[in-house]
Length: 219
Image 1: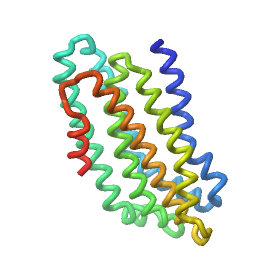
Image 2 (image 1 turned 90 degrees about the vertical axis):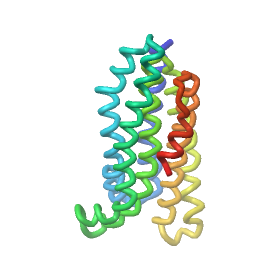
Image 3 (image 1 turned 90 degrees about the horizontal axis):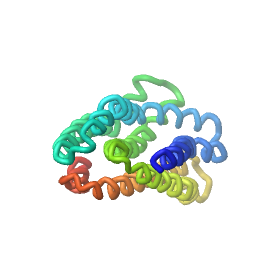
Image 4 (image 1 turned 135 degrees about the vertical axis):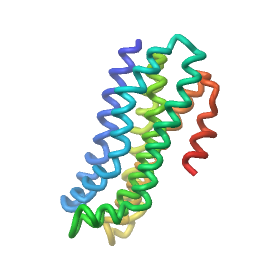
């Protein structure tokens, strides 16, 4: 049963990670799609770093104490807070300095990626919040919650990405307006994934208010 949900989660994760580019391929010209690729690369850096740490350090640590509830409850909030502090600092930096960073690294048409980095960094924050929950769920054998959270992202993104693009650019005057609406849709889809993941993590009864902590960190 554990492996089945892992398999389903892996398939859904592939679609979740590629769905934006699949949809944008029919909505954007190659130039704008390339600018979006640059923005995605910069904004996803904090998430990829946290994922690496989570896979190499956090998940093995949780696995070692999975059968010791008291130790798990003691370790979980401390490790999670450390990762969220690092990830939050990086995401806040991208939101504040995204345009300046792009201007420093790129020139010409790629400078349009600056505001995209800012919007995508918000999505990255929700991804980091979800990743820290996912490691605990996986260590405790609750792989179905990981699959459910990823499924929520795929469904919401499939609906809101094209809808956001359409409503933000109804008159077709500027494709960048549509792209901004689509990026907001991506952010909401990551928030939906985080919400499902947090509900699953709360059921582990870890003795910590996840929603309360995350709201304070987000603010």
